[in-house]
Length: 107
Image: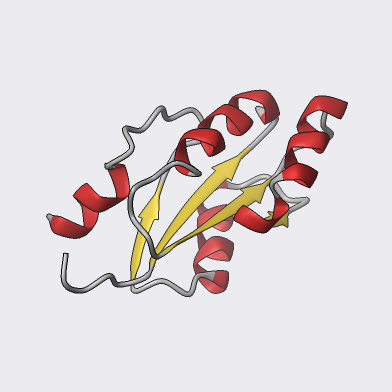
């Protein structure tokens, strides 16, 4: 791939911390080199396991917490913080292949 435009992956989530951690783990292993991940979280609270995961991987994604629960608002807040040339919205329970982002850029 000659050009690698920056891709922003926006993942809104609500009260699904452990599932989100699993999804993020897959996205951390993407083969595309120029990616930012933004999690827009509207959850009420987290388990210690989820908080530890967030702390251990905080350098790999941006985390934004919202009090108001609204999927369109979460997506728009993610867009406000996005730096990418290409935006991908993704659910918090996706199990992507390692080529997920590359496939979006190529197509």
